[in-house]
Image (tube, rainbow, N blue to C red; front, top):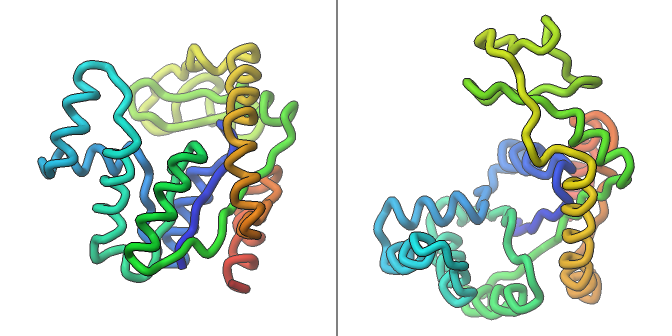
Length: 215
């Protein structure tokens, strides 16, 4: 099974991706992790990508797509993979189509996590994190035992600077603007499966699992 997962900031995409990986034995390929692995392994493409990143420049699509091809050709992807964070544009999607064709494989489905914008703002603005151990909380849904204090290490919790309403609304608008053409592209191929991203994590995953089980 070969999948893409999409969803706006704070939709719980990462959580669902982890559950899909564990339950369906798929390689979870996030763009950031892919870059780190290639650079750590000092592959030719990894070295080239690092040269751009060290200068604060965007890595060209040709290199990113090359890294994706390099990554999905690894043995752990033989049973399938879940691409997370790629493609982000129509041009990247077309590049991806080309390399999948070369490898004689195809995308089976695009899992699109759908959320209500106002609820999404509340979800993100209410997030709190531990600056020491990274544990995550929420003022309404995942409260620490002691208000404002991390259960794990006892450090005072903080709110990320970009977890404010104005920034969140802007991020969601940008996501929608940039993602709509990509969703349309995959809709035309009848690959998009919308999943309601509001509610309990396990309930959301049950819906995901039911859909994937039917593929």
